Length: 295
Image (cartoon, rainbow, N blue to C red; front, side):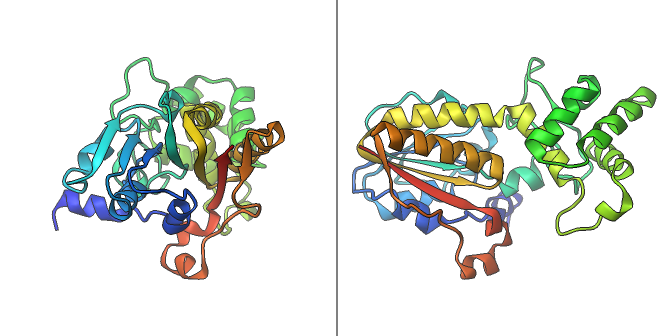
């Protein structure tokens, strides 16, 4: 197996069948995969529905390069952009898989994971420009109050104020450059009794900074709105979220559309991973799928 092939096999697509079944697609449909990532949803759509047209969005161009050879015979168009820039019309289905790809976590070298010592970048773009904000900018230049607000607000981290204070104290002595620098800071800030638990003590801080760097919640609100506008009547939107902040945005958006009379809920109860999927892919534990149909 080549290095590229190995990269292509790491990510396991969550709630794959449920997401695509929920779109109720027909042969010849047009589908937006707004979060292409490892390409799992797009590939399954291509296999199951003849002559389907797929428009795949991702702001990380490298994911398209890694998909070479997978989509022979598929009518797929790659769009190197954030899904907040969707501007299509008359689409039959749209998929939002809001989880961070395992390939990005393990192979990007951009500091998404606290398990590897990498530069603090955390942008979804493979090649950020000097004008793009990075995690290094956030931890070295943002004020203590702002840091505390994002770590608490986006990470739901109860030790946010302690962590923000420790970040500011640390950077007085030296620049914060790497993921391990940040892990060390969080470890020093959190009382020992809170360092051992089901999730790693740095998880929420890393999540919060990543969300801030990429304006993920702002992009989600904008993407849902533009995605819904792109749907034709009876077109459907499948959205997989992985943490409560995302799910809250999705739930609120769906509720608004239903109350306006412009949509109906396909599943009134959120769809969760089956016991079989949980066994094969522990990452699916936190996944929630909601499906909306335009009227």
